[in-house]
Structures are given as C-alpha cells and as structure tokens.
Length: 64
Image (cartoon, rainbow, N blue to C red; front, top):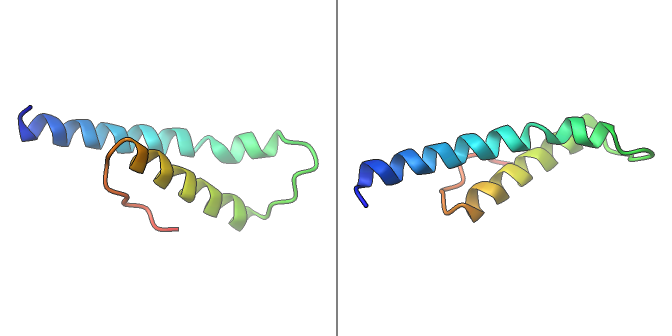
C-alpha cells in the first residue's frame, strides 16, 4: 500500500477517534449519580481518544 494512502488512513483514524471521544462528555452527563468534575471528564476524554487512536494503529497525538 502506498505511503500516501497509509498517511490518509491514519489521519482519518485520528479524526474519527477525536469525533467519538468528543461525545464522551455528553454521555457522562446522561449517567445518573456520576460524580466527575469537568477536569476529570476532560482527562477521561483524552485517555479514551488516545486509546482509540492507539488501537487503530496510529501514533497518539493527544496528551492527557
């Protein structure tokens, strides 16, 4: 597979991971009696994004 295709697929994977991870705060807000601060939800979102990116075989670009 040409390197350009791999690069595009990895960027697509990162964008998809970012999109999915950005849904996490909304999901957390729907869980009754959860006791997370805004900062904790953001850290969880970053960790989730990194996990998705890593599992897609991409380099992690978000720090947490």
